[in-house]
Length: 337
Image (cartoon, rainbow, N blue to C red; front, side, top):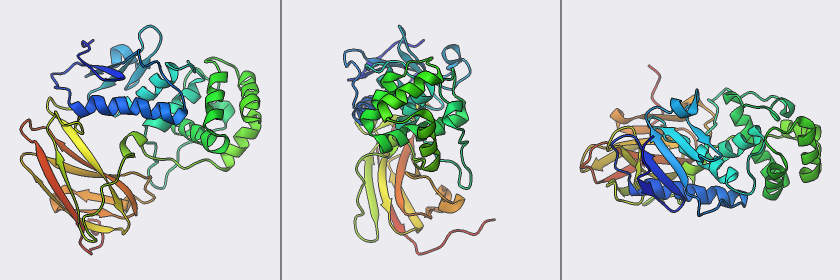
């Protein structure tokens, strides 16, 4: 286990690899803890820092899952260097379990973490399984393919009954409670039993959404009607720069962009060293062809209006700044080869 080498306001971090922890990494993780607390109206004891270990192989601690939160006397999270985005999900677990809520039903627990720190957008034209709640609650484990349903259920309770009702429900249910106890908790906190709640949920489930940890924040405005421009620093000491952990000097920063007119856009990137740009939607696309980004072509097809996240990455130690411009070309999507 790596030593804890850096401490933020809410999180302390140990990294197994030879990685210099960038200023924005701790800042972003601290801010996510605050975000989850604010969304749920709960508070984790700020005097108890969350321990995060970024390691090459999580198997010694996490068995057969990619990342894990270990509660109890350890109270630590392990995330792999190859998929550090798992941290957003695990931090939500820490907030809930470290508050007065404690350990609730496993399905609800994964639902809160998935709602606050995951992207469960299905591939266009597909859907996740939708089993009834009685098959999901009061279980020792949650299947991977049921995590999206758990996130949907948490969003459903928040929207239909309110955040206070969700917190009361989570607080009422203890880990290991059987279905009759869960039914009583629902009647007490939601004024409806399990069967009635399940019927309402099945009839009107909320849509899936991308990871709020990555898609919240201010949108960078267009410079004028035709051009979107953005300048960024990529030095590790900049407070907006995060580690990617995939290489010793891998790091990234990002900006949010609002697209009102779908179409093809030219992308021009200028940097003082090696750097790349990627664009990802902050919504669940409805069509496979809604996003087509080929960096070698110098353009991107944005087929749906909405918010997009523009991500700038580098693994070169000397790269310190970049600028990007984006403008519509008036061309349509490329024909499939």
